[in-house]
Image 1 (tube, rainbow over the protein chains, first blue to last red):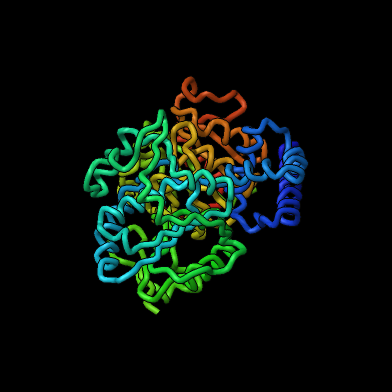
Image 2: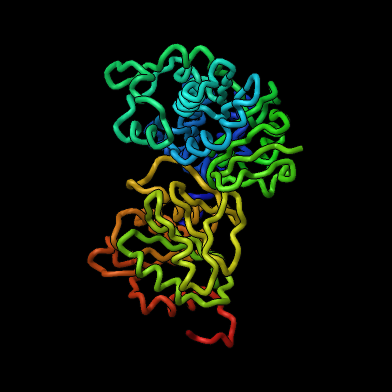
Length: 277
Length: 182
């Protein structure tokens, strides 16, 4: 065994012990997360915290709630800005909104909202399409620290590129009319915030908490291994009303999940599915 | 010892060399190939690369299996990591300004395959150098394709010209006999 191999074996052992500790002490089970992605995030966290090993991180995380929050923050890879994925918002406007117009009330669940950029972008879209008064937008994340940021309704000030993306998605006004500037930050308008409900929910362990007409869960399940991924899809399936819409990331597939037959993919969209049974 | 995975990383400047490499891969290659080519969000790559390649070139979805004899191209906007026999996509921040990043692929290959992987890095970008070093330290077979002076690697890493790649590959990959050379 080379020196590189034995160092790697030790690192893998330390990672296992860290995950075991976090699961048993804090109830956050990261053991079923996709291993290569998790390892990369953990190593990134070590660099940011200037720690030498996962053992050192374990000692800190087990004794300090804030250290755990910091770790969970690093693990999150939610959208960093408003209207990150232009194609998704275009498809949502063109293909989902017309159907939502025919329904008297719409509950939307944004899974893995992180610090809320994607949630607020969705809220702006629904408001512009005249649906906001009959919508309730639930946004959830496993990490309470990220949620408390999201609840403030403050996001990094959108740059010119974000404003251009907003126009490209079919934005009907000016993006800057949706927030007031405060230095490098943007405070979103109160009428957006009053219909968004941020709630702590861990897709890995918690059950379904409502029935929704739209579930947006984009690039969140990438973090899970196949077993947990399939279980999470069972949660989403239980939470989605018949004929409701499930929006996944551009490279996420339903084809090998237990619920593949329950959905139809909307043609020519980046992975928007409709529950048919 | 033969390897079970071939990973290839290439900066934009090497795009035409990658096309040549793919066109010369044996049609009966018994291992999966994973390719990270630096790309913009709207570059269509799989179809043009696939036209001249005897293997099929696909952009896999998350958690798809790695299939022997198939080229798995990292999709725009995602890092492609390998998790033993499956693909793991990631939307982590870009590395060296790139997503997909070559380091991300090589690092995960070092973790999940180690000595049973072979890696080719086309010279011309800093992305991939660190990952190549880590894969090498885990026993992986690595080489850099391109001009030595721009490669940015130490003398311990093998350097190849594009013409040498076939020979290098046949050292690590068992090729079925009787194949017809193109």
